[in-house]
Amino acid sequence: MSEWAKLYRVQDMKLPFGCDLGAAVNILAELPPITSKPEQPISRWYAAYTCPRHEKYVARQLDERSIDFFLPLYRSLRRWKDHRKQIELPLFPGYVFVHFDLQQRLRILGLPGVVRLVSFNGQPATLPEHDIENLRKGLDLQLYAEPHPYLRVGRRVRVMHGPMAGTAGILVRKKDKFRLVISLEAIMRSVAVEVDAADVQPD
Image (cartoon, rainbow, N blue to C red; front, side):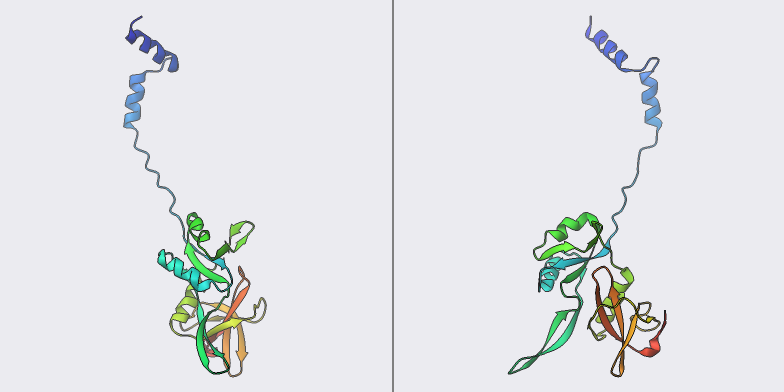
């Protein structure tokens, strides 16, 4: 049997009965190319839990790797026996907020000083985008802020004007000043930001 005959018999065995190979090739050639786009990864805010007093160290590593992060700080006056000094401390001790898509999670978890991502039911918990962005904007404008005991219930208000406009929280009063307590449920932490009482209304 010739080589051509052998090849023909093999092809004949592989093709379904009555299949015209030439016609099939022509039909396939006329089909439009498959151009399905892969889904674009979505970046969200997550909380990275750090080793004690490693927040700035982790933030520095994120900055060196050009990963978007937010480490909110506040100034605190510390007194020693012979002098006083203002130092910057994390508003949320033990946490650095990181903006990334979950495909990058190993880059975050592999950083020295990062313990884990705050998660619920085995999945990293997303943080409210507007709360993070408004807090960042307020701190950029030098609004006074300080840590506050975590609050879950109380009189909720919403800021209507100013850099924190749109942010909802709990209104508290300290001496003659009003503060908006913003609570992040994912990490069970709160922060108090100074606001003008005229800028808020019941939520």
